[in-house]
Length: 529
Image (cartoon, rainbow, N blue to C red; front, side, top):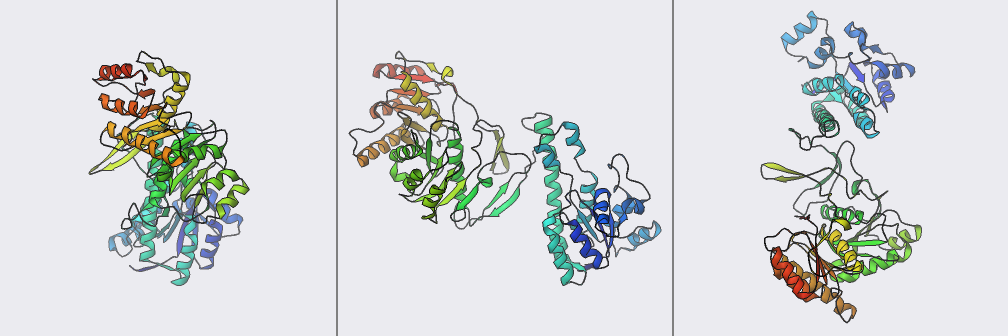
């Protein structure tokens, strides 16, 4: 059946925005309106003629509204195959009237959970009758139109106007697909709440993954790939998707990936001294703290000015004009900050292609949650790497005890290293990275690359020696051989922080003692692949 005339509509909505206007348009077209509870009251208050569901079924709403639409006279009207003789005979025999249009949305389960309601209230906001009706109508979309989103009311009105009070099969199929997605997402939120919030399960037997499309992106990692941005349903941490984009082009897939890496790293320094992070290809190439935000940015840039070109910048303080002016001295893709004053915005406005993203607050670096990664034929799921190492957790394993300054440098380098792709090596000195080595197949090469970057930066700045001289080196995992330590010694590092746990720990410790450097073990590693 291609076109179906709408003669009878059932309206039962939790979100009543726009429903009165829609019902008015339907009534003007001669459509009989059937409704429930609060929806029926809202329509009557607007002066519309409405028939209660209880009049159709012969049963009153009962059990605090839990039972009202779960009835054969409702579901028969939604599920009947109109041109099937047996279905038609059953409708005649049992006085079942056809329902041509269902307008329904569900109890606000997501909002109820988000505002921290008690368990009993959460349970009461699990809709039963709504999903049952929606699925019935969507299954029978050959004959029934289902609309679940108030944003689609105008589309429905236009569809009816264009086709003389009828809907096309193409429209009904589109709405049915959206309806099934809505009930699936709704059920997934409920299952997640039961598993994670109510039952405190780490890995439930069935994992429901959901999301709402925010935007289609220009392309993926490469121009021949398609990409889109989805936001998870239910309570979740705020991030880039909720940021205000003040200016600049739309973010690409790679922009989002890199900007997320920058946001996660700057979150480590929430509430600390002014800090700037520069990220390129999801790896930090410069991180520094300073007395001012401009000072922090310039120190971060000095670590690797070559890689910083076309990078992503994140800061932990609202942007001011001097910092914004400094940032605009080189090409930058994205800047992320918890606010920006008007002079800073004016400075960035001179660079219209630069994307400026403002977040309400930095995410919690120690928040929980799951990370999901698709692999061939399966999903890999793990908890977030929210482990933390404090000063008191460090174990000195060398003869020389690190100084207070070395301890501070080690912890700074360690914080950055957890956000560098493995094998990760980070040199840091006096609140700034001196060199970063990322993603190599062995740790020795990562250390050498970090030292090379430091030497190049020193030469470019005209310094007498690279910042790695007198620095602390962090390794995201244990040093399996002394060669990685030798690279640190050659670079001039005086202290090393690493997890420990290698079968050659004693060999590495002996080499550190021989060189007179201090070394501490964390007992925790931070691989990032």
